[in-house]
Each structure stands twice: as C-alpha cells, then as structure tokens.
Image (cartoon, rainbow, N blue to C red; front, side):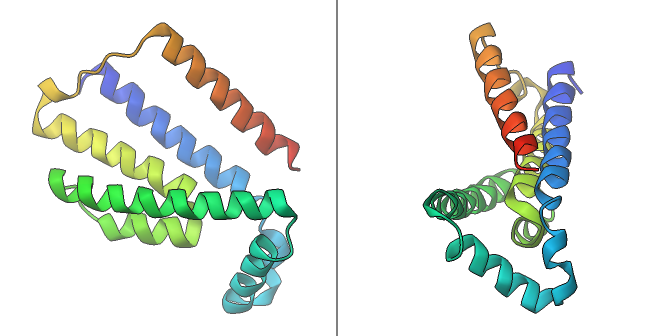
Length: 146
C-alpha cells in the first residue's frame, strides 16, 4: 500500500473518530428515554425546537447525507466495496459524519487493492492549507458547543 493511501485512510479514520466523539457528547440528554422516545425527542428538538440556524443545519445535513448515501451505493457497487448497508445504517443510527469517512477509507483501500496505479492523486500545497483551515474551523466549532 502506498504512503499516500495510508495517509488518506488514516485521515478518514481519525475524522470518523473525532466526529463520533464530538457529536455523541451531545446525546446523554436523550439516553434515559428509551430508543424510540429518544429518537422522537431528538428529531423534535433538531427540526422543530431549534432556532432557525439549527433547523438550517439539520436540513442541510439531511440533504448532504442523502447525496452521500447515493454516492456510497453508486461508487461502492462500482468498486465492489463490501458491507455497503453497514455504512448507510451507521449513517442513520450513529452519524453520517462517522459513517461517510469510514466508507471513504474502505473505498480507498478497495481502489488500492484493485489497481495501485489508480491510487495516485495530486494535491497542491494551497489545497492542504485550505483543508487544514476548514478542519480547524470544524474542530473549534465542535469544541465551542460544549
């Protein structure tokens, strides 16, 4: 496996882990309600009891999640990635911000296994800086919600 593939897979896995920790730190308020009541209350809060910014983000993430699921099925079937439904179900019950990076890691490993000549990619220094900036904003915003 090429170093680039290892780095990208590691980045996806670390992102999934951070997303899991940062997102799920907000769920203990729902744990005492039972799984059905907890989900009902969560979605009431996300869609109806939130302020306009919270509702915007909920709708935005739901549409993004739908497109991610479409792409996971199309790309996963094209490349023969195993366990596609696990990623979709994890996106629903855990978080799409966890499931999608895990799918991307599995996809990257599958591409590397199929043809190592396809794993090469080119990324510019300015791209890395932009991604680091976006990551910093994401991490700071996540920490600020506590």
